[in-house]
Length: 321
Image (cartoon, rainbow, N blue to C red; front, side, top):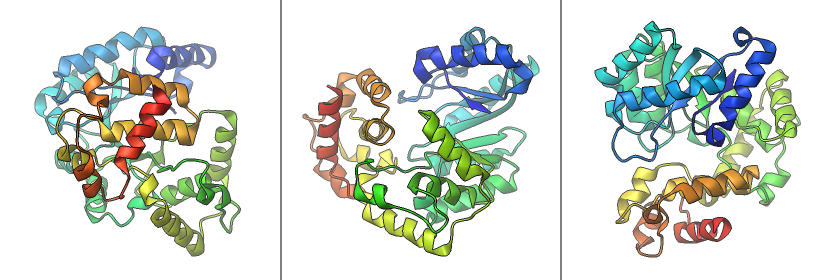
């Protein structure tokens, strides 16, 4: 199972998958790919999504993807009939077998509830932000239950809910079963029977080895391990952006992208993915990076994680300048 997108690596990832599929046979791998206009304030027309993914089939050296996602979905109107008809046409032409969307912004619950209302004939799968820190989110749990009842498969992403890797809580964490912090976070998500699978970035072979070891191990987290994760969640709250951009960004004037900037900072500090984070940050418009012309006090006061938003945005500007 390969999770791809037209935005990943400026198309390089699609080309790599295409070469690999040629080597081992297209039918021996599952490709999920996505197209999205995730920074647009308004929903792009359905044909723009379709045309974007259509351009990528040549790069992937395939005539179809197994599953097609609308990527980084923010707009509820993208689940209206015009968009669903576009996907249905793709299915009829053999361009995709299944359809879904990925989402990790502030309206995840709204999107999931709308999909549940449409049912599995319209939406077959959702990949959404879900991790150990969200177990107590009642509205999210209700939305997940509604999707399961509707027959929609759920894939978790953003499972690490990471803080900078040099923090003492990261370096010293361990479980009764011998898992490190990163493995424990995966095990915690897999313990939820509503989750079919999870999608976790693996930037090197050591990450791959650790993830595979956690997946293959039959050892489950103990209740003491779960308690340790909860303590970790509380202690590191102010270092973790929870992606609720609708809360902080609604408190400032202008186009400043707070949640996206903090996410890119996390890529660099936690995953050592500095080059990609720098490129993503620089792709933001000057207004979307302009933290000097807005008062960030109201945003920080509204942040449920109590993040020092001004300092963290300054850290990002210095790191990616």
